Image 1 (tube, rainbow over the protein chains, first blue to last red):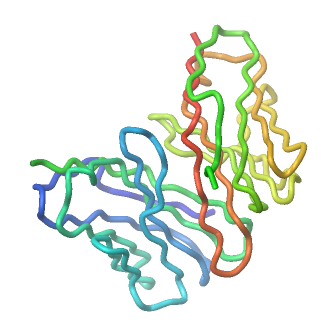
Image 2: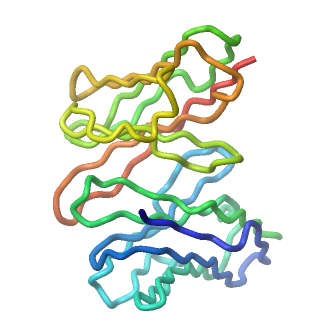
Length: 115
Length: 115
């Protein structure tokens, strides 16, 4: 079974600064997908970014980028130029390749962006 | 597309009552998932369907929980009888299979409170 660990329950960052959220996972699979989802106070789960394990290039989406270290089983999320709207819970998630699209989530990191 | 539609948004009921949560997935998506979110256990997969067929219900906590998907555009999660420990936010999500797909889109969730 896969496990996903987010070691930072809470973090804070000043507006316009950069913050990195950590995620590690455990799997014996070679092919898989990794995701970051954001859950603002509205509780809607919103996809932030997606990474395919067979791609060495780190995924980026505007101010959001990842540092994917496959050998270390690490998948951190960097948020640049933090905005007040980035305040939310962030969940790292793992999906096995070709195995039913099931997501296994980490425990989440609560991020507060301060003005 | 209106996204994944869940109802009700909020439900307050008394212990012992039957609760039915509803979900309309995105048209054309062939996977449907039910997740439960609690403070103690985080996001847990309860059950998922592929082409309306239940594939894995190992996350369903006990026989009081049941889920159905009578057609491609509707699913229900039923709890009978409900207990206070069932209080949680229940999310429905859908996705499309195939290479490059597999991103889960979540509904807004149903917050259940059992008194």
